[in-house]
Image 1: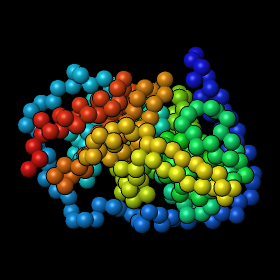
Image 2: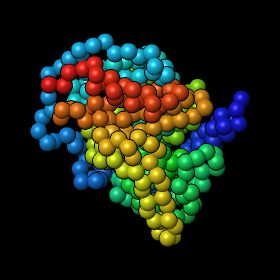
Image 3: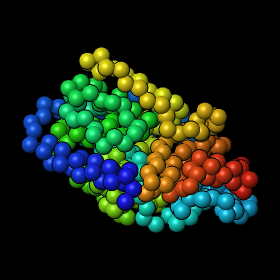
Length: 306
């Protein structure tokens, strides 16, 4: 067993014990549907996207794609353009944080301030270095988790949600996955650490991404390359985007990245073509950025966009 996997498993045990204990605390936060980043519903409101099917003009060649599983689809219509092993259950690393964010979004007020109760002791980067006892805004922690994939942000946001709802966060995650129809997925921690009980499929992640991308709180972060904020104790927190394609590819918008030794590289991105939004999802990849760009190139060469 690798050192990283051992640490991850230790962190998962630590997390679960924290949340079982947190159920006994009284919480003063009120659960409410947040109004954040200017909107809480669909951000695709500037006219209707094309509904005609995208046509294939050549058969794509996938021999140079390293990912065990991938899926490319039209976000508005759901039309699948390219795919491989979309029902294979795989570790998905920090793509898990999309569900963590959605559960927090639906069960808390992201505009609320809350106190950080626990320090993340897993030692697995990236982290914000959140200070126990500091008071922070939930939306700041949410944004840092999605942009910089900060593990302590995910842990702290999950704790806040547990205290707000008096319900174990893992139970909320799996209930939400079931409600969405993610029948081939299971979740055991909010960070995406490797575990035989934390997995999904490209087909299920399509459902999750379609849901989160309807919400401005998620979709408006697509071009953010960094994020910083301060807590009540004047602690300064900052993170940089984990999607390395943003710098040199202005037509790419980040959705979420992930990497662990067990899962390999994972990446969900979005590109805009002829008033369409196309999602490129790769899982268990040896080169997540390279695979994403190769699939993006195939969109240009093998499909018609009239």
